[in-house]
Image (cartoon, rainbow, N blue to C red; front, side, top):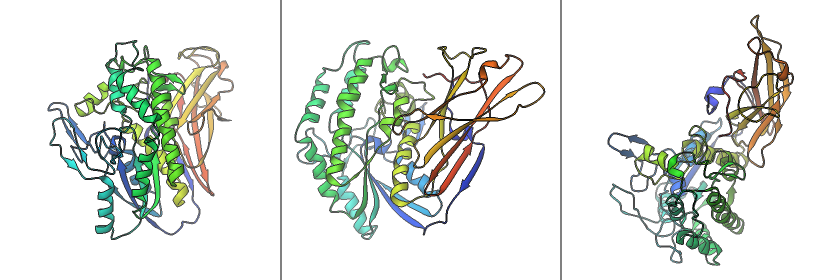
Amino acid sequence: MRNNLISTTLLGLLTVAIPAAAADQNLVIVSIGDSLAAGEGNPDSFDPVTGHAGWLSAACHKSVNNGRRFASNRINSLPGVSTSFFDFSCSGAKIGDQNAFLPGGGLLSPQQTAQPNVNNFLVGAQIDRVREFQQNTLHGRAIDILMISIGVNDVNFDAVVTSCLENTPGGDCTHSDAVNTSRNILRSTGFPKEFDDLAHAIAQLNVKHVYITEYPDEVTIQPMDFCGLPDIGDISMQGVSKADSQFLLTEVLGALNTQIQQAAARNGWTLVRGPADTFATHGFCTSSSRRYVNTALDSMLRQGDKNGTMHPNIAGHEAYADALIARATADFNLHLETPRPLRRVESNVGIPGPEAAPFVTKAVTVEIAQHPGTLTVMLNHRVDTPFGAGTVSSTAMTETGAGRLNLFTAQIPGSNTVVPFVESLKYQFVITATRNGETQTLTTQWFSVGDEILVQQ
């Protein structure tokens, strides 16, 4: 049985050690940007009978289900801090100044929305609207965090995705007109200037911290293990080959993230990293309970059109919130959240396949959401018999993830001696996060080996 483990199902005992609280903080958080910021792919509501999706803004496909709002709400629930969140994002937005390579506006110029089956209109430049809001509503008060997601529409990525989805299964979309346009923009000397124009406009505002987020790795099963036939997730993605996925990551999304990183460095912004790592085990071809990104079919079922394809789903937006909170925790010295386990995988050491082979050593892996604290994980394990629970032993788990991908793995000592049908091998995780003298510990429920084998797909 496959099952995606989330903290609500893993939650057991929770211990907290919190140092003396700092003075209360009230943070003003403002979000601007494109469809990833707006929450495209995750409407507030959807009626499958009528095909009607509910949005905060139908023309912008702006939803309450986006990572920036999730981050603000979760920060607001921490002790000693409150947040006020204001969202000006709009799907389809580009940087949109007069030097833009592709037509359309967004941040620096007005944007004409173009969503299906809604009343579209001309949306004012997001920076102008933020400036007016700061003057008239905030009365000049500083914005503590300005969150930005921008760039993917400027480089024609939506057309690139469409060209790959419409490709013949097993074909090659890497030389399409859309791809050539995208690569030419990314390689141009003028594209970086768009970010610098944006920085000049932001400098006219009163902003303490500018957070610009990287785009996620949406196309892998594991780092550098790419989605594509036969690993497609569902039939709606069969036009994307493994070669296409590798090309999209390295030549488009990776190149765009490099441009964003360089723009952040030039202009004194904070690059919020994490999604390029944490999405890498949750690409579009993983199981529906595991993936962080909508397939074309997911988009149809969730909002009635395909515009949400290759956009983060709600789990993906929670992962974006993890990255934003990790950064804000450092900048504002916030208290720690409880660690958030995501999934577990059981395996047989030396024997491929998910089956619980008898008299073979068992290994367990747990994935934990990005967290601002230093994580350590202990694996408690015991052997039960019909006469009762066995003695509990503990084994330290080894971190095997890279960068911000938190994977912890351990073999269970003595698991190869467990007698099938007579003895039952059980385990639980004790996950501890520490930072600046504060500790948060989560102890999960007990699991029986073989009851819920979770495979990599």
